[in-house]
Image (cartoon, rainbow, N blue to C red; front, top):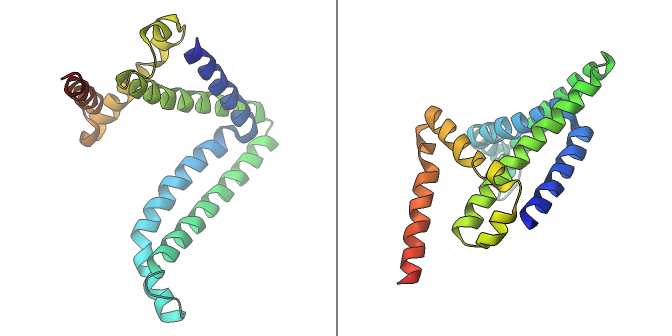
Length: 179
């Protein structure tokens, strides 16, 4: 029952976040984070060199300041573009579709995250067998994370069989604890 209550709370949070942000801003936020991180990793050295030549900043802080600066600038630019696109969608009277898409995206994202949590919780015996059996939604949510990771593993080999390896790891750990 507690598993179901937590999931209902997560779905309520997804609903309100989806209504507030909508699909466009949600997608642009994810893209902004990924592109901002990539840009910061690639360009922080160049920006640190420029800052070192142009300012009196301590050399030990230059990498951190340049990384954060590039990351923030890229995220702000991409999110601003997302807000412009969202206002265009609102103007075209498609705001309801944007909000509905946001609800679906956040519900899926929260379900995946909760699925990962349930995977770890089961392996670490955080829930009793009775708690899992009494849950209505457990059998629906639990397979999501392994399925998605295996799907990602088909595209990115590093993720291949990640959940199987984690399962084997937890079985080995629990075997050592029993010994």
